[in-house]
Length: 211
Length: 211
DNA sequence: TGTACATCAGTGAACGCGCGTTCACTGATGTAC
DNA sequence: TGTACATCAGTGAACGCGCGTTCACTGATGTAC
Image 1 (tube, protein in one colour):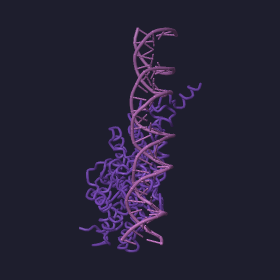
Image 2: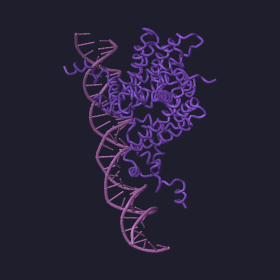
Image 3: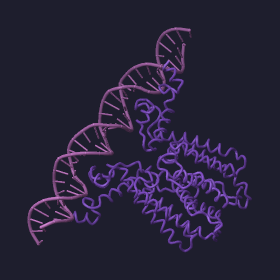
């Protein structure tokens, strides 16, 4: 029965050790930062011998890259949900993407750290790079569709616009919005800060403020 | 003569070991990132026994905090030079502060990493916190003076404005503008990206574009 | 359905290494008189 | 100016520890017939 139960629960011993190591790493990153875990730590957390991880990852960096890759996947999903196909209207949906960005950084500090603050090169491997590009793609599509509402002569390039918003959101998330230690305190919430910045920015592009 | 020469050159052995360790740490951070150096490394680089650093720093984190503190000092100086007392006019000077921000991140990736990406709590010690606040203060004064150009009814809070610009500049610097590995590539320069974002943002606040 | 074999995920013991930290020490510099 | 002493920055040897990595292994699962 014991092994049956384990198999049902997610079964380390034979089964999904790879995913279990990713989750263990995530937990350790959350507690001690992306620099604060070791290959051996991850093995220990997953309840497995120190040699076991070598069956699945070449080294610590490969494990970290997998955490980041998985993080980008969830990030993309969260931004997509925020955008929601541009409904109810592009402007509202765009603001929702911004909110989703910060919500992700707050709810998943470990993923966020692995993705952006681990010192991992953005193209450590093709899968990682692709996952990052897909996540950015959501922002890009949103910017393009929002920009399309402006008259052709005053229409900003969607790429530029999406890079501006990404930078803004990332800056706020990494200075003020993380869910762990190292956050700077602020006389307002990170959400309010991003919201206000986006309002000013979009106004600068020529969007009318809604009531 | 040997010791005389060393004394003149900056003399580790008796003299400024503390500063030498900070510089060694800075060099190591530049090469291998803020997580990539050890207390023993720093001692070795400074040409001193592994026990020597204990005379000057409680532990590795205290050394890192000193690197960050010193970095904030230089950062403040660089931003101040950019602002230049608001000359020739506040709008131009404000843009110069933005340029100075990115120039610092590019020229001093090691300081920048210690200040913002080392996982060090912003108030690890009062000196560090004060140094960080002074640097931010430059941005704050600049924003206040620029905001003062707008009519009272349309004047944005300087604090909000400076937080927006800080976030923007930090986001761009940390995603695209670092002088080391881990930078994402971009179809434009980081400077152009910040410049364009600031133009849109300031337009949104009601500033007229200059020709 | 049953048996024989191949595959493969995880074991556990072992290793060399470099780290952080301590300690009693030494020898140069600073100070009192 | 010179001598005696205190101070203090850096030494070097030592330690225990946990890490990364390897290795021959074991035992469960999958496959062929």
